[in-house]
Each structure stands twice: as C-alpha cells, then as structure tokens.
Amino acid sequence: MSATGREAPAQSATADREIVVSRVIDAPRELVFEAFTEVRHLSRWWGPDGFTTTTASFEFRVGGVWDFVMHGPDGTDYPEWITWTEIAPPERIAMLHGESRGDPNAFESVLTFTAEGAATRIEMRTVFPTEQLRDEAVEQYHAIEGGQQTLGNLAGYVTGTLRTGVEG
Image (cartoon, rainbow, N blue to C red; front, side):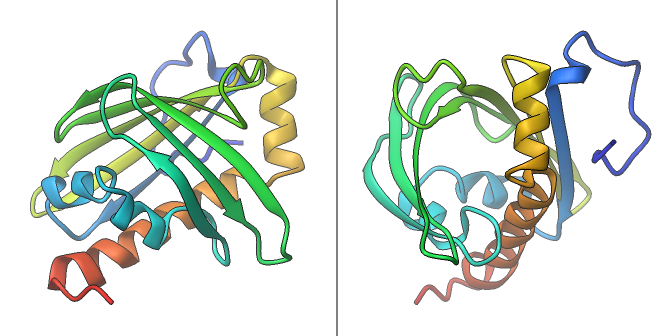
C-alpha cells in the first residue's frame, strides 16, 4: 500500500520495511520546520487525532533526546523516546524512535521539508528494522493513518496557531 500521495520513484532497498506519508502545508518551510524544534510546539500537535503528549525531557540537537508519553484517547499511555540523528535547518530532520533508549525495535524516520512556492511539502519516511515490524505498525497501530493524522495536526497548528502568532 502506497501512502506517498504521488508517483513513487524506483523502489528502494528498504521499500518492504518503510512507510512514507506526506502533506503540503500552506506555510513557509521555516515555519513548518520550527514546529519541530521546540517542545512547546510539539506538545500542541504531535500524534494522531485524540492523542496528547507529556514530555519528561527534550533537547533538540543531534544526539539530544525527547523522552515523552503519548496518551491515547482511550486512556492508554505509550512511552516514547526519540534521539535526533541529523538536523539540517530548514530542510531535514532524522531521528531514531522507540519506546526507550536501546529499544531493539526502534525505527528510523527522516523528515524532509521542501518549499513549494509559499507552501511546504513535508515527507515523513520511516524505516523499520524488519518487514514484520512495519506490518505490525500498519495493522496493529494504524501507522499510515496515524502518520497522516499527525501531519494533519501539524498543518492545523502551523497554519492556525503558529502562523497567526496566537498561542493559548
């Protein structure tokens, strides 16, 4: 199942282990990128619809860590841990994402921010260690829909709250 929203280039060596979602956001690339750089922004939009986030620690730098809990709409808590592996403002962010440091099932995500006129295309490419883990994320955790909802929440936050400068 393709979630790219555009014709895919030649299949990559990791295609059977990856999920790709993208969205065009009606805001400048620097503003969309900024929404990832500070926890006060991330905590307002991160996650699928109905989820909230509580952060234990956050340091946005290569090697820095974001340690947080996502709270599902049904009350389930999901411990999460991200370490940033590459930051190239305002073009690219790469990270390792798991439940905790040393998680053997952690996956790699690369976010690219491409200017499209006055708008920005954000692409989130996630590569899992195995095809089985990718399939589990899609089937059990609805990762494609969750990724699309997360980017939708980002778009709403950036074009509403952040772009207008009205933060509550």
